[in-house]
Image (cartoon, rainbow, N blue to C red; front, side, top):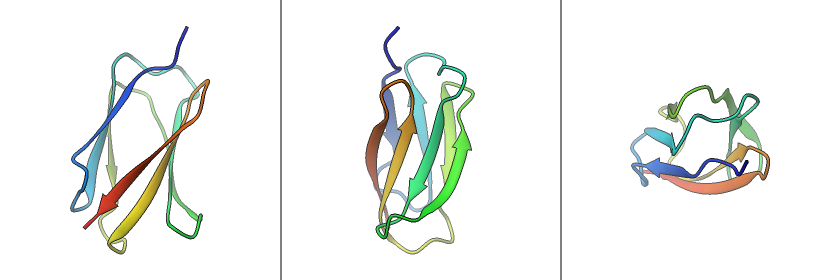
Length: 80
């Protein structure tokens, strides 16, 4: 079975954004947020089709979200 398709919104964000999967993610799906230096600042187990990520309190800039599925995927999020 192929990996779920993911939408991220809003992007850019003021702090809170959502990961929306087109179907229930498989057990063992994780989202890890990295800053520009490559440091992991948050890791969250994904257990539903829509998950909220909150970056409030972090510096504005570019962040990378790595979604661990069968085929890992990395996307960019802009925090303004």
